[in-house]
Image 1 (cartoon, rainbow, N blue to C red):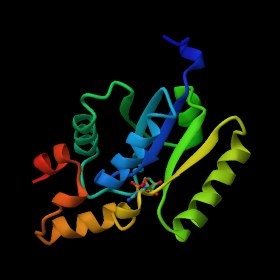
Image 2 (image 1 turned 180 degrees about the horizontal axis):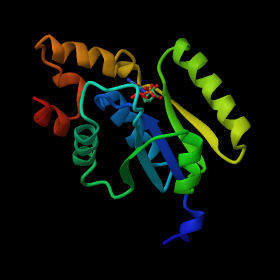
Image 3 (image 1 turned 180 degrees about the vertical axis):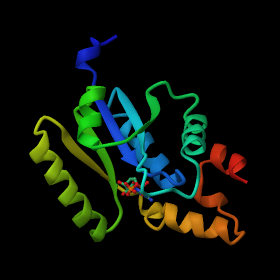
Image 4 (image 1 turned 90 degrees about the vertical axis):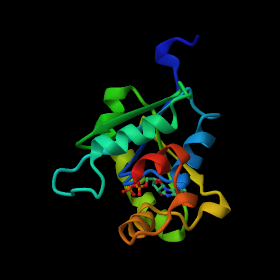
Length: 160
Ligand code: ADP
């Protein structure tokens, strides 16, 4: 067992409204890089989500019920402050497109400016998951379609 202060802890922040197979893929791949991955659902009072935060959290917990290296949490405020509270030195994000890249670059550079000790780490989407997004999954659900292919099984079984 590693000394707790030596643990490589990554925060994976996002809205996860809902958590998709794209998100799941990033987390599973990150497990070989980090000792712990904290999936952190950002709660922003002026941006109400589609699904209740508590449900989003519970669904993600169920998805990783057999994975002790994954934790799920809800946070508010600056992500970089949250990293400090959790003693996390890595910020994990996924990249799909060039517009993701531009957006993520700006955030990561601002975060670096605020706390140089936290490193942003990006994993490229798996090719077959490039098109998966929470926005599209919400649209499918809203219109009564079947989102089976885009949701982790534990979430698909509970979301309806
Ligand atoms: P946010 O509102 O912060 O963008 P999201 O829940 O939409 O939160 O996404 C969280 C992270 O997951 C982002 O880094 C996003 O790029 C990444 N992500 C979302 N969908 C995919 C996917 N299909 N493949 C890889 N990464 C993804």
